[in-house]
Length: 577
Ligand SMILES: Nc1ncnc2c1ncn2[C@@H]1O[C@H](COP(=O)(O)OP(=O)(O)OP(=O)(O)O)[C@@H](O)[C@H]1O
Image 1 (tube, rainbow, N blue to C red):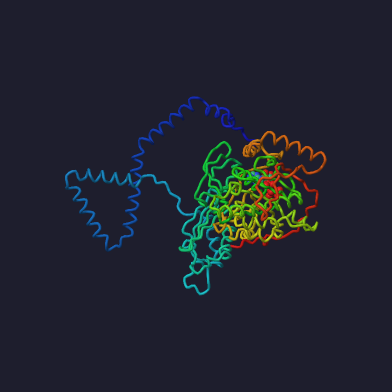
Image 2 (cartoon, rainbow, N blue to C red):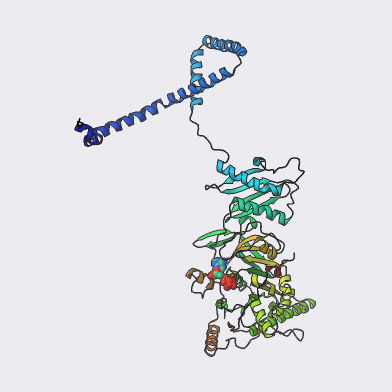
C-alpha cells in the first residue's frame, strides 16, 4: 500500500521558522527571561537560606546516623529540653527562627572552591624530579633517608611554583647533611639533574644554603640586551663591563635603554693603583662580542686616559678610534705592534722611575705619570703565530712589564681572545689578568676554567652576542650583558647605535683631522701604512728608561700575512686563584 504524505505543516519548516522568528515570540521570550532574572534576584536570599537549611539537615541526618544507638535517647532528651526552653522564654520562637534563618544563610552561601596544591601533571613532575635526585642524595646505611625510591617528595620539596604552562619556576628542596655541598663537582651534578628535569633551554639560578641544607632553584629571565653604548655615571678608574642581575651587585646606574630611562645593575671594574685586579682577559667563541667589549672599554677609557689598541685580526674594527685625541695608536701589523708594545713597556718603566724619583724628592708624581694608559689588545695570538713563523719576537713579550708593574704605573692591559687560541697566551697574560670575562656559549667546565669558579646558573646553548659571565678577582661569578657598542663604520650598524658610539669619541681637532685624512689617503694610494713618524707624548726618563715614542697620527695596517692559529684548549688559561 502506498504511503500517504504527511500534512504539509509537519514537513515544511518554513511556518515553524516563521513562528520562531516572529516578533511577538521574541518579545515574549525576552519578557520571560527578564521575569526569571527578576525572580531569581528577589528569591536569591530565600534560595540561599533554603540551600543552607538543606545542607544543615543533611549534616544533621549524617550526625544522627553516626551517633551510637545508646546515646540517641539522651540526645533526644537534650534537644527536647532545648525546644522547651525556647518555647517558654519570651520571644524564644521568634529568636530561634531568626537563628535558624541566619544559620541557613551562612551554610548556604556560595563558596568558590580554591585550588590548592599542584595539579596532577605538576605532582607527576615533582615526583619525577625527586626520583631523579635519589641516586645523588641518598647513601647506604642512612636510617631515615630523605631521598628513597618511592619516597615522599613532599618531605623534601617544601616550596615550589609553576608558570602558566605548567613549567617549574621555583623550587626549594632539602638535602641530607652528609651531601658534599662544598664540592663544586657534587653541586654541578645536582644542578645538571635539575636542569634536565625542570626543562632545558631556560637559565636557572641555584642558591645553596649550606647552613640549612637547602637548595633554591629559580628560573632566571634573560638579561635585557637593550642597553647600548652611552656615557655611564661612574668615577674615574671605574669601567662598566656590562649589566647583570639586580641581586648580584649592590649598585645601580641610571641608563637609557631605547627611549626609556631606568636604573640598571652594572658590573663595574675598578682599575688603577688600588685595584686588586688591574688587568682583564676576555675569552669567547668567534663572533660572541669580545671585540665589542674592548670597543666599549676603549670608549670609556678615553674619557680620562690614553688608549693604545692592537687589533690582531686586522679587520679594522677599531677604525672609529683613529685620529681622536687620546688614541695613541690602532695597530694591526706585526712590525707596528712590536714597536708600539715595546714603547708601552718602556713607558711603564719610565712612569715607575719618574714616580719613584718624585716620591724620593718629596714631590707628587708628575701629571704625565698619573694619566691612565690603556693597552687594549684584540686577538694578539694571531700576531704571535705570525711572529713565530717569521722567527721574530712574540709581541706578548712586551706585555710582561705593563702586566707586572702596570698597576702602580696607571697602566691597564685588556686582552681579548678566542677559546681556540687560548693556549697561545703567554704566562704573564694568564697570571696577571685577574678580571675575567667569558662571552657566548660555554660549558660549565669552560666557565670554571677561565673564571676559576663555576657559574651559579646553567649556561644555555643559545645566547645573544655580548652575553656571558664575569668574575673580578675572587668575587662571585656574575652574569653579564655587554652594552651594544658596534663598529660605527659597519654597514650593518643601526643609525641609533652609530650615533651613540660616535657621540662617545673625544672631539677631533680640525687640523689634526685633515692631516690624518691626508696621510690615510696617501697611505691608501701607495699601499704603505699611513702611520707617519712617531711623535713624543711623554718625557724621556733618562738612561734607565728610554721610551719609544707614541705616534700622533695613527693608522690601521691590515696585514696581508696568513693567520692560521693553532687550535688549542681553554685549559691554557686556567684561572689560578
Ligand atoms: N653586546 C652586544 N650587543 C649587541 N650586539 C653585539 C654585542 N656584542 C657583539 N654584538 C654583535 O655581534 C657581532 C660580533 O661581535 P664582535 O665582532 O664584537 O665579536 P667577536 O667575538 O669579536 O668576533 P670576531 O673576533 O670573530 O670578530 C657583531 O655584529 C656585533 O655588533
